[in-house]
View 1 (tube, helix red, strand yellow):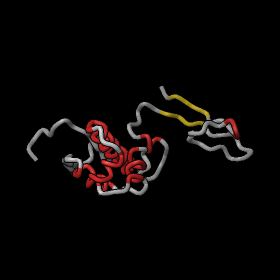
View 2 (cartoon, one colour; view 1 turned 90 degrees about the vertical axis):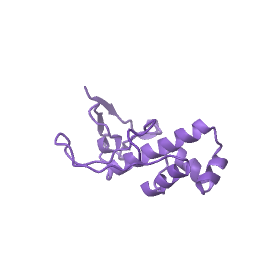
View 3 (cartoon, helix red, strand yellow; view 1 turned 120 degrees about the horizontal axis):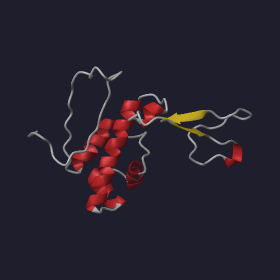
View 4 (cartoon, one colour; view 1 turned 135 degrees about the vertical axis):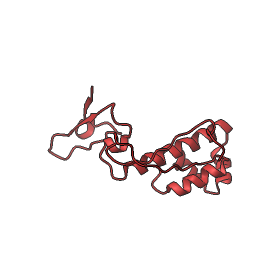
Length: 141
């Protein structure tokens, strides 16, 4: 069953409220459905599949960095970027990071990427991009 949340207005609006209230207007209700597997699509954002793929790749980078117990400074050296870039990456500020660049970062962390291309299943309304973190690949790459 979908959950409906209503953003509050003015100074009482939560800092992370997804729907800003227009001055003098009643805020829109946001409906979250458990049927959505893409938050960006549920929010109606453009390029939702690409945004989700980048977010999943950034999460994978964060998992590797955390598992290795690296500092942001050390991670920056390994990735060949500034420490502030690592900070943005690990905090989900991904606007400056392309999928290709995130893929290079994963390779720098000794992670393989396998890109699979196939027809869209009939049950899906549109083609998508999926990122999946696996412990090991099911076949030799």
